[in-house]
Image 1 (tube, rainbow, N blue to C red):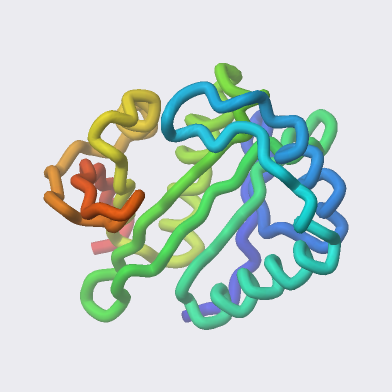
Image 2 (cartoon, rainbow, N blue to C red):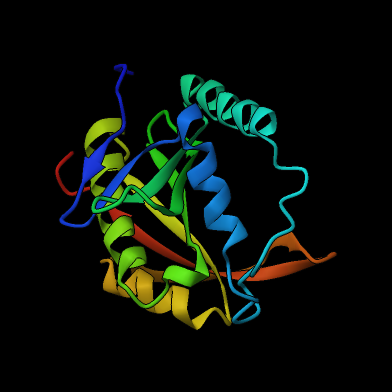
Length: 187
């Protein structure tokens, strides 16, 4: 696979790998979260163990995973002021004849209802298709996560199926909805 720097800009956002200099900005995003807004929102986090040294090790781990083509974690930053509003991530499921990955996303809850989630998912999908040559990207969504289902559909993902007892969460096997997007530019 070609070596690439993952970076994309939208009208309002910059999406790129986290850097060591992002620590204070990243920390503030978590530290300023509002209380949990619904069951899939972690809300405000205790940041006591999230030191700069921890953060640097965290992003170094991402870099190593990227070099192995296993996982890509990108920060979502507002262009106007550089504030970190969230992240998108891509996990390689299988390369070979499949070029298949799973994407996740999260926006800090103090920035909800600004369209950052939709904007970042659309941009990141295009970036992952063009720079990493994935053919298929899936979103795995809890069956009762209405905001995520709506975002998936608005971002151009198609509901594909229900995978029963697919992921082990909260000490039980949980059903997930699978939404997919196919890269039509590669055949």
